Image (cartoon, rainbow, N blue to C red):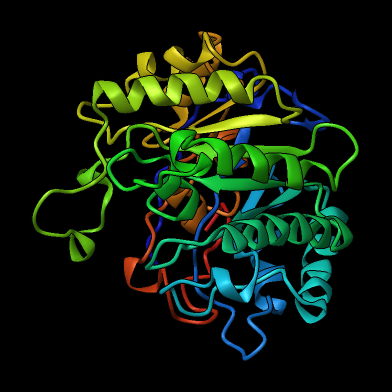
Length: 345
């Protein structure tokens, strides 16, 4: 077994370890677990299992867990295998076991709502049904015991497709106002909750550099962080500022230097008056820096949480972090999922 060298640095007063309130969500620390697709719902119902309860329970020390992207309906399902849903009673019952474990261990957990998109232009009836599906999934998440939900409007999936000027060539109101779908989804999703319990995740800086190498397409890649795209997202964030959101979750560009560029997040701090979660490429030091600077209220970590279920404790005690087994990121059952040790080894 590989042992890790302990760093003797107590970080109990670090910015990431201070409590914070995101809307109506109180967090004891600002270390957020980002949504991670792990493809472990290997059953006909696409329902979470006891493995999911163990996995999220192990990580209940996070200030907030944002559970993996979860299908809002059968129509939302994409190419990833074994991704859970939240659109039928068996899934709701299974998720309720997960939330009970996390809450029993003192954690807070929200569910990310996900729609992969379709390979054709959606009819108005399709759009209306999709918005209704989001609203129903949000209500199901509330009934399953989640503390809130997050709308996935990042990456290359449905809502991001509507926001993209190079892909959305509709001539109706969902084309002339490319943000209309997201705003109507926000309204449908927030209706299921009292108070501010809904977050939105955006990735305005998404480019071909964010695609896994196996998924990169030839030709003209439709996502680009050009001036027009960033201006569109500026306007969108300003619109979201008027919605009853708990937080805005921003995925920054692929870091080109030793750490993330904090200025790209500061751009949106000026436009959004609510809490902001920063994501992509952060470690303990850069996470502390963006919070200390007042640019973000919390920082989300993805891969670090895969191999470090006790990530908050490691940050606090100055311990080294472990690396994950990439071969088990999207498959493997319990292996590479619930078998990472906590400190000390």
